[in-house]
Amino acid sequence: MENWKFALSSIWGHKMRSILTMLGIIIGVAAVVIIMGLGNAMKNSVTSTFSSKQKDIQLYFQEKGEEEDLYAGLHTHENNHEVKPEWLEQIVKDIDGIDSYYFTNSATSTISYEKKKVDNASIIGVSKDYFNIKNYDIVAGRTLTDNDYSNFSRIILLDTVLADDLFGEGNYKSALNKVVSLSDKDYLVIGVYKTDQTPVSFDGLSGGAVMANTQVASEFGTKEIGSIYIHVNDIQNSMNLGNQAADMLTNISHIKGGQYAVPDNSKIVEEINSQFSIMTTVIGSIAAISLLVGGIGVMNIMLVSVTERTREIGLRKALGATRLKILSQFLIESVVLTVLGGLIGLLLAQLSVGALGNAMTLKGACISLDVALIAVLFSASIGVFFGMLPANKASKLDPIEALRYE
Figure 1 (spheres, rainbow, N blue to C red):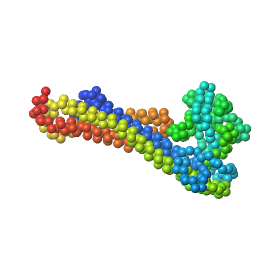
Figure 2 (figure 1 turned 30 degrees about the vertical axis):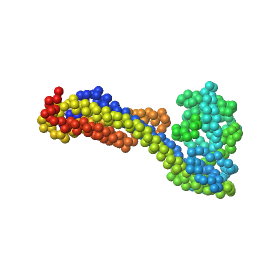
Figure 3 (figure 1 turned 60 degrees about the horizontal axis):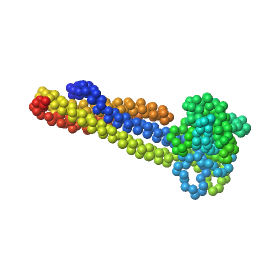
């Protein structure tokens, strides 16, 4: 306890010097932990999007002899063969665990409103049950009705990203009943929705909009049934149900030259995990250099402290303090400085990760307990490593020579 008292009194007696000494540790720990926290949140967000355990399973046609598309889940497959809705209704009826289906088709276009425009916006055409299945949050307005499909109405729903760009952030109600232009044609905005998709984009698209699939086919020349999805209610068995549906669709359609298949996203998840781990490690290692600099700063200040307190060390040794006690006193002081700096860095990192996570709409952006513990232990190890030289120097001082020091 005596050594702790001496160490803490020394730190408290030189507050400004102690703060400046800790600065390198604070910055280093904060930088590394922020990178790890955001990196893990981004990895979890993206991998959850491409996880094999999804409720919406795409069925795509695989040509005979064609190698499996390992990255099929990264893009939408346009169906080039006729698919009748009654076939999918039969699949829903016959396979337990599949409760519905929907179609989509797609295009990209520039969307403009007055003087604002968004290039390369994703236009998704959807069948009638799409919004019931996806269960998106409709933040303003309404979704598509049966009349909208039968009347070929030129109406559109915008996602919150696109609505923010065209009408200002959060002004979703003001977007309703406004007319936006796509490909020199006018569309009435009837709703704004919020998706649960990851903010990390792989295709360069800038926000999205939804119309009836019949309208997209008419305006952009696509097929009414572009991509086929089934919706399962047993997420743990999604891949098995998807494969059953693909086999059944192949048999019902009597199609030749290939078969329907389900994208296996497990390889995508593995690749994403690998790339994010490498990126986080490399960037984290670069940021960790500041910890090395901070450790050197601690060592320099401790050497100065030993020189300043030479007479004090001599007096303690003359009064019976052992070499081990002197060594532990300065080691404790060094470790307290680095651990305190690490804790402050952790606090700053937690605040930063929370704020950046909200700004990037990353779910679960936080610092995990294991990362926090590693940061504290690493800070302590820096204190021991860089404090050993000054502590050893102090413990070896000759008490007579130390008392003579001016």
